[in-house]
Length: 142
Ligand code: RTP
Ligand code: MG
Image 1: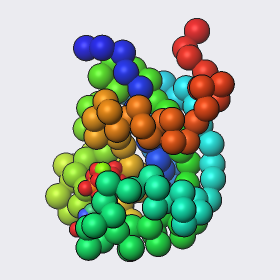
Image 2 (image 1 turned 45 degrees about the vertical axis):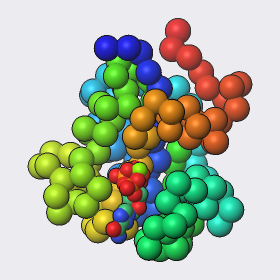
Image 3 (image 1 turned 135 degrees about the vertical axis):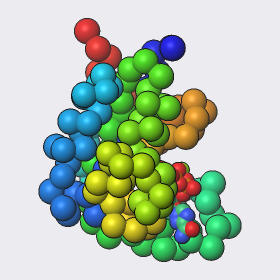
Image 4 (image 1 turned 120 degrees about the vertical axis):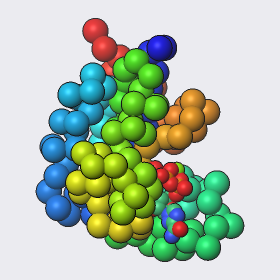
């Protein structure tokens, strides 16, 4: 598998539950390395731009309201097959359908407050990492 980068967001519900470390620990155990990170409170424009692909979906306004409801932790993760590895660690979008032991099964409360975001393809990962980080904010592994 190729070395890849993916974008992860620890969403406002998980930050409020004080499980940032527990979630990042799952990435580390799966050999995903944090190569960029910042905590931020997204503006309306930042959240709308980030989720632009969902603009026409019925849940778009709720999604943006939720993502701006409190601080998030945005990270770029790097590792072998990082995009799929992260999606596997996250589990299904709806925590009721997420496999036991996944981040969403363990920490998410609902389909809206579902603890984490992860890029779903190489193209999304590239766009999403560039959306939040300048090149000089990414620290490649030594
Ligand atoms: P994410 O983008 O946050 O990593 O989640 P995902 O790929 O698993 O799900 P996606 O289809 O991209 O949807 C983005 C977020 O929108 C909310 N959602 N609500 N009410 C609904 O039917 C519904 N569907 C999606 C979720 O919070 C999802 O994470
Ligand atoms: Mg998605």
